[in-house]
Image (cartoon, rainbow, N blue to C red; front, side):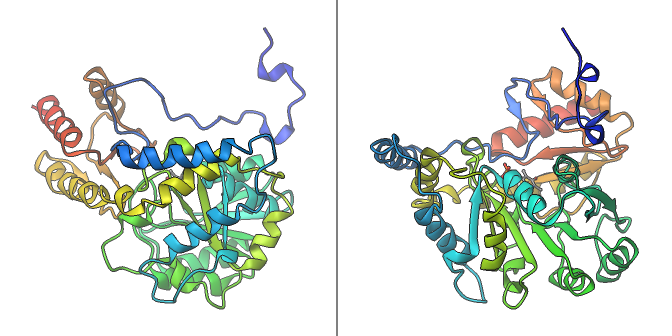
Length: 363
Ligand SMILES: *Cc1c(COP(=O)(O)O)cnc(C)c1O
């Protein structure tokens, strides 16, 4: 058998590591920020009905413009938006927001161009940058992992990137990003500003999203996903909101018919029941708040989180604690921040098992 180094691989990919969240089969998988509640039966029925209809014409290529899905996503994204409804022409979708982000980099990044990020943040951002030949620059965060308008502005002035990636709330820290910070980033660059809002549904009720900033800002891109709050990680549906001109740019790089007829149908079926799909969000928020309250009682520090996970610190040996929990059938995430681990807020039962086990291990 050959190894990677025997192959004529692209020079810029040599020595790189692939995305590698462990996929061990465990009873309590609290490692990749999924919604751990299964999709309710009636919603599964609706999805099956849509998929069944899609199968009637599966011999044909699907709607390349996924018109019905874009209308449904526009409708969904228009809820609670003070700036008014999102038009379907402002929506684009792909197989997970990872593919959306890849298409953004294919269109606006690439060899000779650069993207600025603010680690610790989503580990896939630099990986997708590298795979599209876009160079990755980094700016720094405050000691509590927050971003400020001044900090972001000076990082942009220093690195003059073609794209800026902000993650709001930020994975793996849970830290929110203020609209002022996003505006400051936009005003400091002529490039694309992408706000990754994978966890936006978990924000405090009533707080604004970056979508309020879209009017008049044609270089602002907001990526979202059905993988997290929407309990649809296995279906692979992500989307973005942006000026229709951005979407014209993405049409230049997407593969034709990239979103299968079955994917489109499944997402449509689920979106018909968005209220049911989102009904677990407030329970998950409660469990997150419980982690934020109870982890300090066990002697750990926590990062203020507006997402469905908590980064906790004050751990002497994170690798050891990770292994000890795994031995108890609980999988969480070592995100490589010294002294810290990240845990997803699951169901009430899962969160209880995690906290009780941690308390026992601590004793
Ligand atoms: C989980 C996650 C995604 C989701 O990716 P999908 O491809 O839509 O499953 C995107 N961005 C961030 C920051 C995430 O944590």
